[in-house]
Length: 126
Image (cartoon, rainbow, N blue to C red; front, top):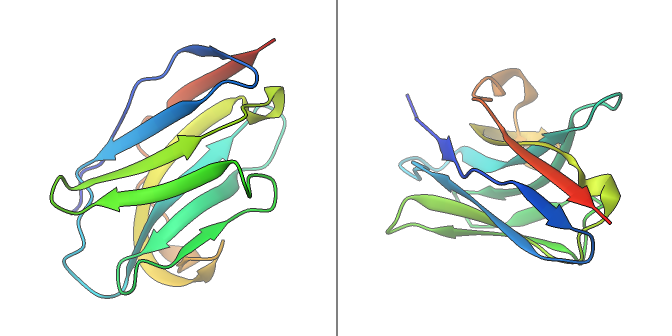
């Protein structure tokens, strides 16, 4: 079992920057992926960024390319999501997840996506 703890984020301004942290990540096997989803009211859950443990390869959704950067500090067992140029459309609850690697959302075996946790609310205002 992997326990993930997401950072607490409050209100931020549009065009600002934000870094989300998820502690408790592990890379003890070669078939896991860790990343971030978001879920905004009235919208489908969206996979935004992820990284695979086997080779540290990353994937970014089209909606966040050039603005979101995922990284991992293995020594600290922490994954980060650096968010730049925030938009109102980035407002959502963000979830750090870990799952068996696959092709879903660029990183995951979709059937293994079951570690959602509480999520972190990001609210972007003008």
